[in-house]
Length: 146
Image (tube, rainbow, N blue to C red; front, side, top):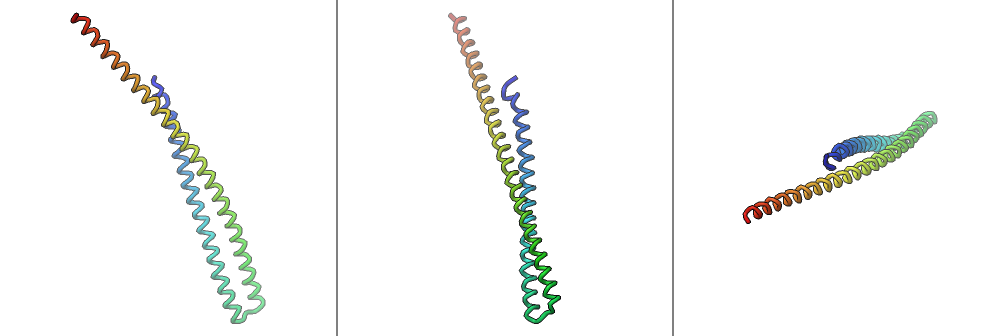
């Protein structure tokens, strides 16, 4: 069996693994984007609530209302901090998936190069054999004529 034919299943396996890696990377990038969007929403909400807090404060509020609003802002700040951690974790995971894909892609390219090289060698060998056969036939014809 030809080397290029024997290597084809390995090449296909590498291509399949690369496709899995690219899908996982895409999924993780989407997850990262969602986490970033959620963080942005929390930060926007905090800014809006802070403005409301300041507006109500300038009109005069009770100490209890002030304390409740301040407590709520602290909770929003904690949620923002937690969401920043989630964004960092998603970003790290995304980078890991990217590295896995790069490795899988490199392996696929190497195997494709090897299979192509084997195929080219096989084609050159086939051409040499055909040329040798033609030369031998031509030589036999010329020997029969003499």
